[in-house]
Length: 301
Figure (spheres, rainbow, N blue to C red):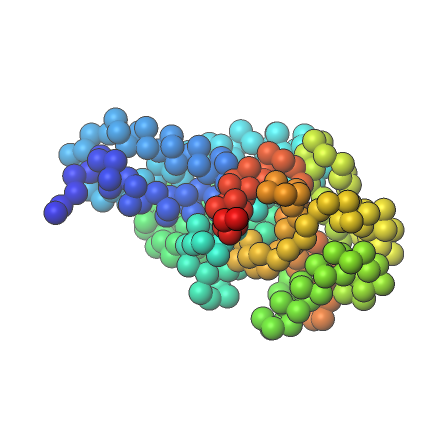
């Protein structure tokens, strides 16, 4: 049966792709959900006869809503208490689409989302539409109401800015898993010597507490300083936190919980045979979406 544009049923069929787009543009799962809901309200009021391709129409609405949100969020993020990190999303359930290739996983990685914060809202939109959704420049131009030539220029500028700040030294999958699992095991046991062996000399530790929980307000750089920081924190693990490994943003991550409450999600960047970056999200507001996912993924008693 042919679906009529504007129906709830057809919108639902596009919702996962629209959420995936909004999350990549915003770095926030909660804001992505709100954006998709705003798009649904516009969908319900739209002139159905004027909608030729519902998926393209919704992508245009969602993208421009996200550009507006990013523009207004810049000041808020500049005033944020401590480092601002993207919200984690568990990806084993397909929430952000297939994770079958390294390219698909990389497109939602925490490391990339952090780099995308350096772009202007429009640059970010062009980059995401081109890289993650394979839009042509003609299609991108139609989405954001710019010329194809301008979109090419924006993409080229965004690509250069991302590439200039990016490192690609990820070890092979088996070694990657071993490093992350070794880190989680050592943290669980309070094995500081074991943790130290896994860290690169120039490791950087980022903590996003948003001013709501105790967290480092600045990045901690260097193995020695990170170890001093960890020495004061491993007692938490023995005080009721349960540490496990799960796939978040397309890569293995450390998950800390107390009972069924999510406490923190840590992502890792790896170089050769060591951990070069650790990014820990502890802000409770940024764990709401992942917390719902976690409960849904947890086996029933």
